[in-house]
Length: 235
Image (tube, rainbow, N blue to C red):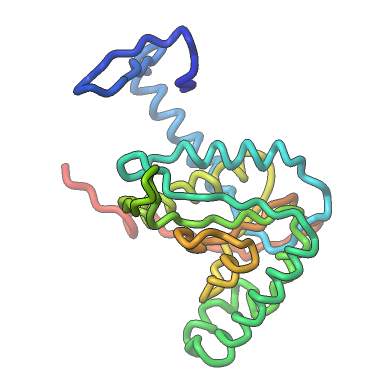
C-alpha cells in the first residue's frame, strides 16, 4: 500500500494516522484453499543453488527485491535492517577471501565431525566460489540500535526476529523473480562490517548471492518433512 497516495483517506486513532485496509471482495473458502495449495506447489519447487551463471541481473531487479523484503513486519515498525547490494568485482573477491579464511578455520577446527557429515550431501565445503560468480551479493545487516536527532541511542525491538522475517521475504522474492540464491552465514561475520564500512550500530546477519542458475545445475534431491512431522493442530 502506498502511503503517499493522495486518494487515501487517513483516520487518526490514538493520535496516529491510520489507513483503511481494503479487500476487493471477501474470498470464498474454495478460493482460499485453491490459492494456498497453489502457493505451496510453487514454493515447494524452490531450491538453494550454489552454481551461478555470469548473466547480468539489472540493478532495478535487486532494488525491487530489497523493497519487497522491506515490507516484512518488524517490532514497533522499526525496520531494523540494512541491505547492502554488492556487484563490484573487487569487493566480491575481498568478501570471498575473508569468508573462505573463516570457513577454513571452521572446517578444520570449529565444526564437529557429525556436523561435517550432515553437510556432506549438500556438497558444501570451505570453498565459496559463488561469492564471486554470482552477479550480486546482498548482505543483510541487523540494526541493533539507532541514534535519534539528539544523538541519543535508541534500542530497536525484536531485531533478530524482524530481520529473519525480512530475509524470508527476500528468498521468496528472489525465487518469484526467476533467480536463485542460498543463505550464506560464515561465522564470525564481522569481516563484512569492515569490508563494507558499515556503522557501529549494524551487525552482519546473513549473505545472499543472487543470480541466474548456471546451465545444467544440479541440486541435492532432498526430502522435506511431512506435515505431521512438523505441525501440531489443537482443534
